[in-house]
Image (tube, rainbow, N blue to C red; front, side, top):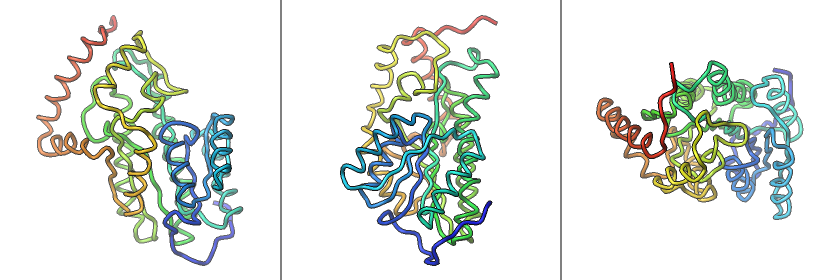
Length: 294
């Protein structure tokens, strides 16, 4: 990691006058987090491939008196991520938070997947988080404070048939985060993992801007399926999640009622799998998804 000038005050700022990077900050959960962080006094860097949309969000934050910068970034490009972190710290003198939030969905069962689909979702959802951690952790350790917040999913805490590849990446993010949390504490660095339930964001529609569907399902059917889970508004989600980040919670589950599914799976993995299997069969019938030909 190149040398950067760091502030001597080795205390994390709980949002006010802090510096925060949010990947995937142009839309969905990332946008809501960035806007909420700015309202709480953070200087926010919105990092996203959707530069124009990120600029729009940035302009909105600035219009309300907040501090924000938009940067076009591909989270799968480690040198670009490292450079963004370096430039942010050089400019602000510190890095209090990095929210590794960028992610995609690829809809379809495993028998609909090709290896390129696996590689795409792993590169964005897992390698993108790893790149953010790798770029920020050395600086945070050197300055003696910082908080890495990785976005996983309830799909990283419970069986998720019909979303196997997505769940694979999110389980990995949970494992990365909880393991690093135990290791990083000695360096003064906090690590949390956010596991959202169903939040009303573009990823519900067709996997987000850069995701895709591998099966032909009408938007109306997809909408009806997700509405069964009572999606939370991302603005409400962001406020609740940040309250728990401020309290340095290890695993952050919002909405809180989703903890029930996590508890069931922890109590009995067999029961969790059985419940997931029943849900999967029901949803496949409702969506009209057929097994692909061998």
